Image (cartoon, rainbow, N blue to C red; front, side):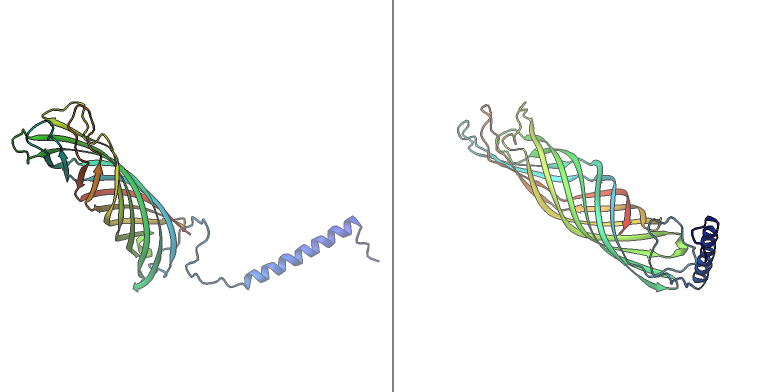
Length: 299
């Protein structure tokens, strides 16, 4: 009888089983047919595909983050209010309509996006990718400007110097068009645009009268903060690069438009100053130029 528990025989038995198993595995592997690629990418594979000037029709869901520098042009600002002089002079209530321009500013900005891209072959290995995406981004700037009141009758001209700490939160829905082809070695140029809304907040507002000088008087002192929602739109153009299959790095230029908005600040409230009405400040539309770099990840 075969003694399976004999060490020598048992080792020989295991070796025989192992050889048969390996032989069976090799035969199965040789007969295995690899499936054709249908836009399925290996997870976290950094092997670059061979470039044969053929582009598959691939769709992707992605998230991304980006940041860069943003620069604004000058924009008009107007300040409205009434100074109640009836108790001090015979002129009566004084209407103030002071107008000027806020300065150019620059700052950093950052944001995030989520989108879905459809890709469709269009001609001889080229494909056009169309994406719909949602973006949100943020930036802060300090805006300053000189305002002059030309409506004073019988009194010297009033000149103001206004300062606002501006925080802008922008939410946009975009459409983006990209061109893909393996002959571009992983690079894809794209253009896009979007519309949405911006919530612009003005904090720590100051309105100092320079002519005639009223030292230490902030005409917004009783309430220095206000916020408003307004229309926003943008256009962008850029270049992205696909690496490690799941990642895209991109660099782009953006033009951002934010529409005019109205803000209400508090009345001037000092024992040494004539009382006023609350102040209405209208900030005209402003244009921004921005440069950004970012990273997208395919889900």
